[in-house]
Image 1 (tube, helix red, strand yellow):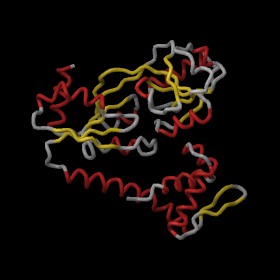
Image 2: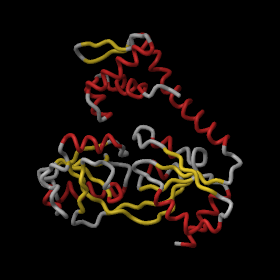
Image 3: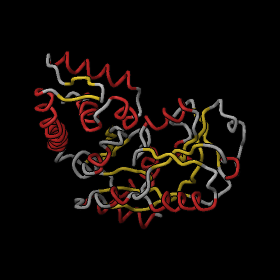
Length: 295
């Protein structure tokens, strides 16, 4: 409902420059400037003034900035509530699906438990893996969708939903297809010496924090570069475009056609499972209990 270029505008205003915003958003400064020009033309307002030290908001820009976050949040809540009202009385389970959190693992589970829900059907609900908005998507469990299947070792995620572990995925390394490591079928940690390893910043994932500490203590030859707290397609694009390497997991091996995922001689893995609302309705809780018995 809102113009998504507003997200870029907020980042530019917060960062004070196109270049800094481009690093935060994982796009080029040129793309940032084009989006700002598009927004100004769309609104017929001058929002930003270029200065030698960066950018400065005009009086109109200050007003748009002040109200933009409210507009975005209100729009997202309105859409979620409208969709929930349409399907309030359906005997349907709504399952979220995205590029990084596909619904296929849920479909595999469904064939084991659907005998206990003979009147229910499944409806897939697509959502974006945008790292800036993923927490708001998690908060829509119970409103926009009933379930997600996803990798979850995030404190921020786990504070917003219930989580039933179903298994673990191996930690792997993704490299561009032209990278010198791309021909290897398996790599040792020492193969990564001298490389820049992209991984989520510290503080939210116990598994990633442990792995980071291990690398920093025992393998300082590997340079670590922080990504946003949650991956989205922009992180994979940055890996493909820069020639750096990316910490990934085995279920994401086909996310980006320009990257190859390679197993590493280590024992790191991360849990995945079923995510559902903190105040889930009775039928969702019944599904969880049936699934526990079937496992």
